[in-house]
Image 1 (cartoon, rainbow, N blue to C red):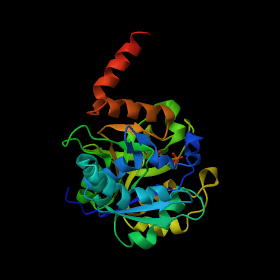
Image 2: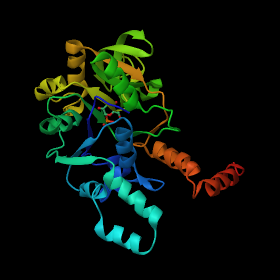
Image 3: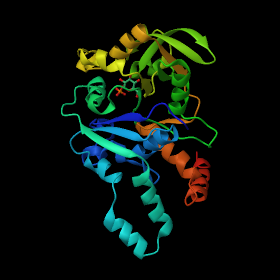
Image 4: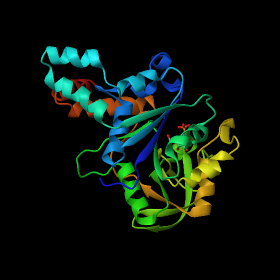
Length: 295
Ligand code: G1P
């Protein structure tokens, strides 16, 4: 994809408490879906949308993510010597996929603060933000991921664009929720954004799954954002300001997505990707069939 957006910010400084104890020593971004860590699906989504520079906001204990995108000399030599060429090319592809630039968020003050940390690298240009909790895995080359959809909307409007998805009433409190006015060709005008509202306060059922394209103006608002919901510097508060100041669009995610930040969603992603995997797909299908017949 020919993209006007060249940089993406991926926050990866969270503690991964929902996956403890697994995440005590392994960053949640490195938990595998079959044989790929979740962060690789997110980076692949960026690359597919034409984004070349990935700004990783890391925290303590996250160096394995940086290592993952680096060259592993010993591993590559061993695979080469033992003639494992297809594995070798998979490994080489990962390190050549994109430029991963890592910066530390020194204090966990919230998502808004994490994004603000990227300002010296992002500079004065529009950029994407991808949260790794939701992962978007296209079924085919024709299916657009959320980031591709957002880049398309940004190219048309020159305004910030965010992905939304309809959620059930019981899930409203887990997400940022938008209020919107006009809708044209599946693109809404965002009027306001509220972080994790109660059902009564929620202005719609359209939630933010964690894919955004922002103009650099977001940094002006982020700079002065005080702690909001749960005492954290939120991203939704400056988003609401940006929407009022410059305008913002929202588009409903059309492709396949998994809530990999949640245990059940993570297992579902593993099952679906496992069923599509050339090595284990058939075996897993037979296993599930056998299992299902017992219920
Ligand atoms: C964050 C954002 C929220 C968004 C969600 C998507 O919340 O603050 O607006 O809807 O990610 O996963 P978190 O899940 O980090 O609490």
